[in-house]
Amino acid sequence: DSGVTQTPKHLITATGQRVTLRCSPRSGDLSVYWYQQSLDQGLQFLIQYYNGEERAKGNILERFSAQQFPDLHSELNLSSLELGDSALYFCASSVGLLSNYGYTFGSGTRLTVV
Amino acid sequence: AQSVTQLDSHVSVSEGTPVLLRCNYSSSYSPSLFWYVQHPNKGLQLLLKYTSAATLVKGINGFEAEFKKSETSFHLTKPSAHMSDAAEYFCVVSDRWRSQGNLIFGKGTKLSVKP
Image (cartoon, rainbow over all chains, first blue to last red):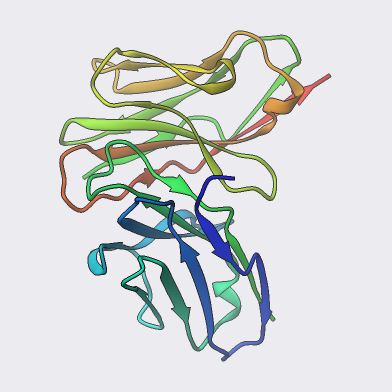
């Protein structure tokens, strides 16, 4: 157990729907990161939050949004889902802003859009 | 801009033989470098990291990597492969001092271990 908790582990939904993925960071970590892993794109950075504030954006679609709450858990909202959004979504956390010590990853949420 | 290239998408070795997974990086700043491993249907686990201390870095499960600045390489090695090493391995680069931290992942190398 890495200490980063992601729920749900699996999600199957239809095109056009909206889903919410949840992440609880490791105790003491203030930064949360979201990554998308797909067969064709590999691991793509989506977004970073630090202590409730958005700090960095990667290849995140406009249909996707995220937030970090006062208790530091984070949610990734995916709307108007398309078949191509099917992927493994990882959350990771770290103590501070800098990435020089690496991140701790959760076990991921596998999203299947049908 | 930072990038990382994993030179082999798939490596196959026999159990008990050495493992070499190759990685080259590009970074405008002082990089931090990492290797992560992903077993089937599992999350990503940190194997080892280089953050400007010793250039030879030891990780978990007998893996090592050597940072070679002149060659911009950070190859992962293990003297003797075990069946449980079969997994996908990711080389990762980060700009050590940027305040917006995000890791840049290579495309991964799938390691197969034959009995």
